[in-house]
Image (tube, rainbow, N blue to C red; front, side, top):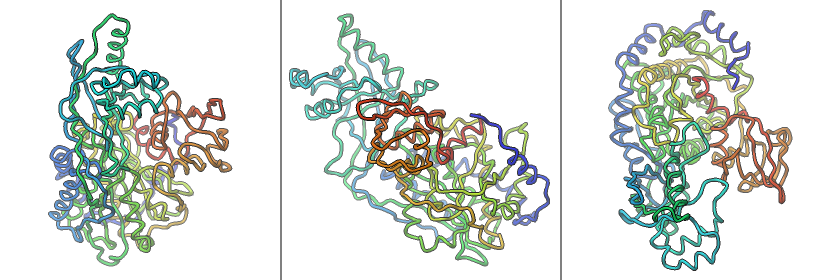
Length: 577
């Protein structure tokens, strides 16, 4: 990607650095905020408690419930007001991930690194069995009879997968489980195990056959062993798995966590500081999004500790269900839609541990925001030797409701809402995002201290502005917050599953040559089966994307540019490259 910024961005940065402005936070108070945030920080203590003591926090799990209760208790210890759990849904089942164990028993003794998607089945304890390749025909399934009940079936990678109808038949025959590669298309990180999950299950229709992912390099070893056995050059391959995925009949209540510093002059007007509390279940949920959760909490603690009395209420919000489609924030905005005209701004921290370096705003907001960020400009960058302004405003005519994190729920309601532009040495999207490596040790303490302090200063500054932040240039967009709706908005299409029903004029898809009836089947060499898969690959791959579509009986490859909204999350990664 071209990392050169346009001349206008450099001019904006220069103006921000040189032009005298009147700050919205008094100088002595700003210095106390900086001292509290940088010298007395508790952000890493919060992060350690959240990730080590509670751990992964899948929406609908007991760990997520514990995390909500913990966060509310910590807000109360700070002395914040109106601390409560905002109930936004009940789910019919509880799913908890415990330990996962995998091992090859023969022809070698090999410990396997394994994972499963959320809301999938576990094993009945430690279960050994033969590992076999999948059958090619229904006749092969029938010929093996009851033997399938003692077998795990290895499912080959993209491009060579068996007919899904055969796999469904194997489920009815009682196979012990399916073993799949954890490879997700990135040759730079062949040992990465990335997980997602589909929460649309009920107690009566919960999955029964384990779907086990194995680290890519180890999967290749399993394939080689099976091929040797097929050639008569090696013994049968036997494996053993203990997959402790636990179900419990619900319902389970789901919440957002809310706390406030009340406004001294205009308490009904609000500045929101937020991050999502939920995580996927594989590791400890550190950079997605323990870092955003605890910077939100630390910003609250800093302001409470220095006795800040904002003119408007600052509301601190920790969301649930972000990973399943911004469910908690969307439910909050929907429930409080008549109050959205009183929300001055929303500041959302997601996408990892890199430090807060920029905000993208509209031209109408620039005069006010120059005043707001004035105390930030005298801070030291957390990277020694960093050259350039410690903070930038990136000014454009409009901001709109794209993006894959909770600020998008507010943008769709016409509220000025911002993700922090981050930069630094952390490789979020390629390394820690939804992987087994998202553990406490990857968080960068100096970045977390810096970001929390910036958030506190900016939130207080906006809360003290004479007027609400201008909404000119904030484009209210329709549509839902599920993956399909987000993808439709990015591409400029209407979809039925992954089949294009309508191509809108002047959209990215129209410019790439999409036609009505095209079925998206792959992004590059990576097969996709649902909208979320496409979004993942748009984050992971570099444009132009080579989108493979089925058009009638033919496969057609369409080079497609990156949609503007798709760049909102990956930009944080590339700033630090």
